Amino acid sequence: MLCILGKQYEACKYLESVCDWSNALLMSKLSLSEDKKNETLTKYAQYLNSKKCIIQSASVYVVIGNFDKAIEVFFGSRVRHMSYLLLHFFEKSGFKSSLSDHVKLAIKLDFARFLFDNRLVRESIEFCDRLGMDGKSLKQELEILAT
Image (cartoon, rainbow, N blue to C red):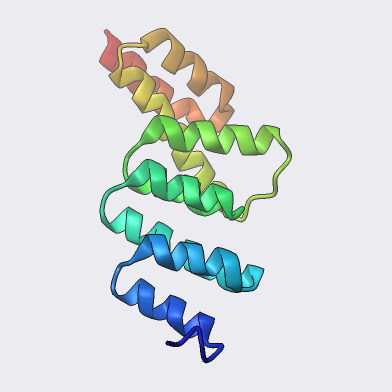
């Protein structure tokens, strides 16, 4: 009924509110502006994240170009290797990130711990070396734990 009245945005909002995501996404893709479509996709990604569908949520964020949010979804869900791999990929690809240096370092240090936890002791220590002074204290901690 809303579509007949030319209120596609309101119809899409209604479909979102009743969690009819397939129709909401289809409607947004077919009839809404790019901004409104991305708004719907963002809400869908948030919904997926709330349902612990981490990979799907991060994928939606990548599709709409919100790379930082995709990294945050992985990092916040403790999917440490994926948060680092995405961060590394986007840094090497030249994408600008609005993540703070502190968050980037936390992701990298967490990845070093991930390597160590998966019995890649030498690799985790070498990774800390590549981080320079930022990885020095973690390197010392990992060396103590490795002995």
